[in-house]
Amino acid sequence: MPRPQDYATHRRYFPLYHFVVLPALVVNFVWSVRHAMGSPDAWNIWTAVMAFVLVLFALAARVMALAVQNRVIRLEMRLRFGALLPPALAARAAGLSTRQVVALRFAGDAELPPLVERCLAGEFAAPKDIKLAIRDWQPDWLRA
Image (cartoon, rainbow, N blue to C red; front, side):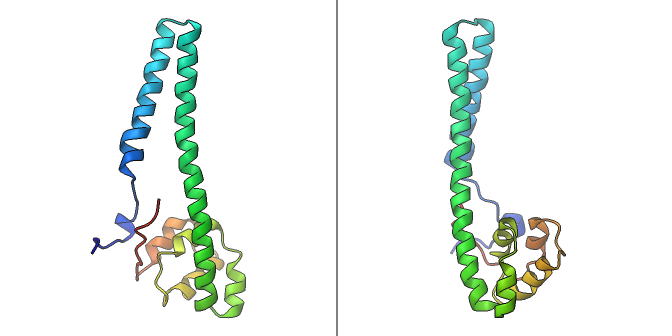
């Protein structure tokens, strides 16, 4: 069984991306820029430009993966809202931001309705505040 998850331990790192690919691409970019500055010919400048494009590519891939995951979380939470919230509250929950819905996914079924009410009342300034208010933390081990 995986270790317990709570606010302090819910952040997830994908080691291959966060600790290998992205750092290697950033180091390659810095090295390429330094090399291009020391010997500014067309090839070295092009190499630096392409190194920068590779960093952007890696960042774009991450952003796209998280965007798709957020869409799946919104769909999952819409189903939970329909099953757990009174119809009027479920209809109002459609007005929650994606960031609020993503934060609410950690809430247990029993505490989800009051947390949705509090979100709609504007009680939480940031998703972090929602997560800190959760008492029955439901882990999400599949987050990308």
